[in-house]
Every structure is written in C-alpha cells, then in structure tokens.
Length: 143
Length: 66
Image (cartoon, rainbow over all chains, first blue to last red; front, side, top):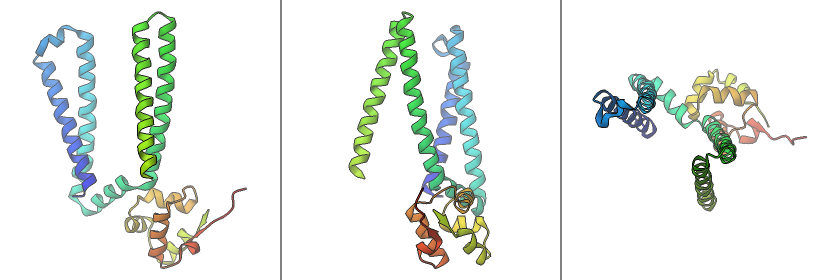
C-alpha cells in the first residue's frame, strides 16, 4: 500500500473513531450535554458529518486495495498534478472569500453592537493573515 | 501551447487510461492535455515525451500568446 493511500486510510479510521466517540458522548449524556438542545444538535450534526466522510473515504480505500487496477487509479488520482493544482487554487479562493466574509461580518457586528463577536472575528482575521505571511515566507525561502 | 499527445498515443494504439497509468496521472488529465485545456508541468511533459521516445519539443509546441 502506497504512503498517500495509507494516510487516507488512517485519516478515515480517525474520522470514524472521533464520530463514534462523539455519538457515545451524546448517547451516554456525559456532562449533561443533552440538557442544552442547541449544543447537542450541533454536536450530533458534527458527528454525523465526519462519520459520513470517514465511511466514504474508507470505502474508497478498501475498494482500491481489492484490485491492483483500482489501487493504481486511486494512487494516480491522489498524486495527479492537475487535480492538486485545482485543489490548491480552490483553497486559495476559499481563503480569500473566508477572510473577506469574516471582515464583512465583523464590521456588521461592530455596527450592530455585537462588539464581542466583532472582536473575535477581527482577531481571527489577524491570526489568519499572520499565518499566511509566515507560510508565504517559508515557501518562498524553499523555492 | 499545442501538443501532439493524442496523435502519438493513437500511433501506439494506446488508450488514454494506459498513458495515464504509465505517466502516473488520472485519465481526466490526459483528456485535458489532449484538448489543450491544461498545460502539463515540465516533469510530466518530459515523462510523456520519454514514453513516446521523442524529444519534448516534438510533442509540445510552444506558441506565443497574442
């Protein structure tokens, strides 16, 4: 099994394990989480989401390990330079949109007197931009 | 950039999938390269040219953008 496929397998197993633990946390009502309906529904949604992702990825990996043809296909897809460049571009666009949205929401909250939310969003934007600058400098140095 | 990937692949009677497996990319990437939608990296271009046993400039033809 190739390194990237192994990584996918470990990731999917971790996703499923976290989802199961979260569901158990809900079912056993640890810390009385079910008393807070809103919070428990968020946690349940989170658990179901990562459980779904984990199962789909695990299915793809298991299917790929059954035949060498499928394994090669999966390996090629994971290493494919075009797909990776599309993924990088999509991530870059997503980052720009996220920061832009956060800035708009932060301003909106500031104007509507939700200072606390506005402050945290502002801090999040600053943190993201600092991380971006650090990563940019590191990548620039190595290339 | 123009390319003759499809022409040389057909000369060797290869499927897009076969070429994709040989050079280690997905079939969709080969389709995009053949249609001229995607310009491959220099490494992939060399892999493809090497597979056809031709110099890179014979497979990939550079054209000035207008």
